[in-house]
Length: 360
Image 1 (cartoon, rainbow, N blue to C red):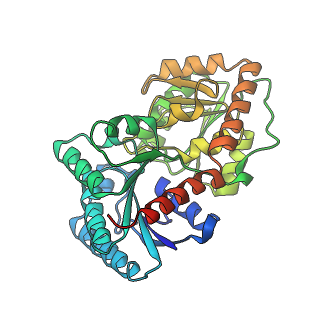
Image 2 (spheres, rainbow, N blue to C red; image 1 turned 90 degrees about the vertical axis):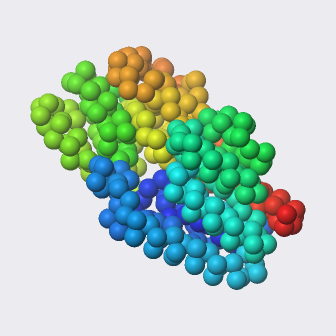
């Protein structure tokens, strides 16, 4: 039996694309197989860029939709395909495109899962967006979410069954030799170095701790780099993008992971999960799945855009005992909840339930 994933593949390595790559490498139980209809963007659009870079090109979007719909129709010719698993943020155009995918799927007698790779109430705010969301949920046979905020929102708008299933990492990403240092020397962030991911807030906190190095790993918005230079900060380092081994080394050498995001498309942060697996105490904003992930004992949760609260969190974490507790809590949370086998088995369980139900 086979499931078709409607999802982007890398490059570039965004959140959904990284998840797709992990899924394709995962070991699936009971003989299930995966294929992919690649939904990656075409042209020069960059969702983490400025207004000009992130603007959609209508011609490119039409070509993209045609490619996706045609690819899905080809995949559905295979009688082994039982499920179509669509992975999107709940943005207006994405939902229009996937509604068509759902129609194509249902007409051919297959089951359709919509997997919202975002925090739905943060992404779907317009009247049109809410209308499309209800239509897409109703058309789907099952919904997968990434956080409790989305679950609470869906409670009021759909009767379609849903389940919260987090992202996952492999067991080899869990640190077994992380040591808590006596002092905080390095605070780390990994991801797109852009405004909505909290880059300016990260830099503002760095200004308050001149004796601590603040490292940002990832592609840097030039405006942020220029802003930092104008401040003359010597304790803020932009490393640029790094491969998996490079990121792992950065995590190993850091003392705290600080993630001050308020990005509208955030759902469940892979970078935060990797930091937890590395045994890092975490300071995060109360946004998307962040609070769900670290809970009460994995670090500190602060309001978005509140640099004073983030600075106070660093002060509280100067105690070694607190950081040791946070480190242990985060590693255990990943082992018990975010390991590949645990999470991927949940997907397969849903596939099998839907397949057993037959076509509605």
